[in-house]
Structures are given as C-alpha cells and as structure tokens.
Image (cartoon, rainbow, N blue to C red; front, side):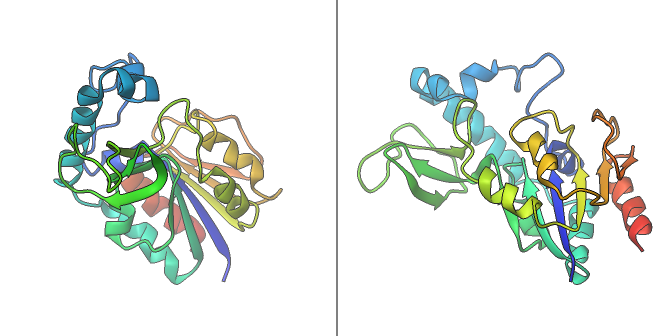
Length: 224
C-alpha cells in the first residue's frame, strides 16, 4: 500500500463553518496577533487570551466535518494516509481519519505552563485560575508565534517517505509548515487544492483551483 501524505490548512475547516483566524488586514477576530497568539500576549493579558480561545472552542463544538473531511477518510482504503494539519480543530478525527499530526496544537486540549508535557483534554471554557495538579495555570495547547513546533521533525520524516502528496486548503505561506514540500522525494506526484493558489510552480504539481469540497471530488477523479 502506497504512502499518501496530506497537508491541510484553514480552508479545509472553513467549509464546515469555522472562521479562519487571520483576516485580510492581519487581525485575528479583531485582535492583533501579538495580543492573542504569543507567549508575551498571554503573560500580559491571560484573561483576554483565554477568552479568545474559549470562543474558538465553543464554535468548534458547534460545527461538523464537511464532505472533504469524509473523502479523506475514504482514501485510507487505498493508501497508508498521514494527515499533517496546520488546523487546531478535531474535524479530521471526528470524520474518522486515524493518523493526524497537528503541527500547531489542538484546541480541545490544554497544558500546564509549568510542564509542556502535562496535556489534557478540555472541552469547556478555560479560565484564569484553572490549574494543573501542581498548581500551575493551564493554557491552550496551541503553538503560538515565537514558540517551537514540536511535531515538525516527525512531519519531515513522514514527508520523506511519501509516494503521493496532497495539499488542501492552505496557501503554503506559513513556515515551517510551508517547507515540508521540500522534504518530499523528487518526482513525487503532488496535488494542490485551493481556490486561490499562491505557490511557486513545482515539477509534478497539479493545481485544482477549487474550494475543498469540490476540489476533493476532482482529486479523486484524477487518481482513479
């Protein structure tokens, strides 16, 4: 069974009704990114940051996977599928995908500020004063700007072994995720599904300039 690596981004979840964080003006839901997505922002105003992610979490619990998520699950019948996602939602898992790597963390998890490995499931609001067993404040299990991306090396290793690459719902402009395409073996067939593709032309790259639900149908036709 051949290896299929799938890189997914915000466009994957947008069709489920999830807002993409960053607007055209660079703001996230009206907030400067430095306020709500950096360690410094959390230190200066933890209540603001926690409420920002509480709103994202509430919204996530109110939406469902779309048909593109479900189409990715079907690919597991034909390929050994690894999904590497920049998304912090759990829609891939809820759809039924079994091998998902979250580069930027997970919205339905929190961790202790005193121990990066002290991670737990969290599906309700997270408030200032909620602590781990050792008394440390809990924070969203999200990779903020300026922080290391713990899963990137594992993602690189997976990309090095793929036979087919699918990029879906991401502009591939955010690093280090955007650099993963450089770890794919030479001459590997690659497909990009995005309504406004903004990527340098790569050899063996097929662009499907559609939204993810329509584009997935075209992708399936291409590989049949």
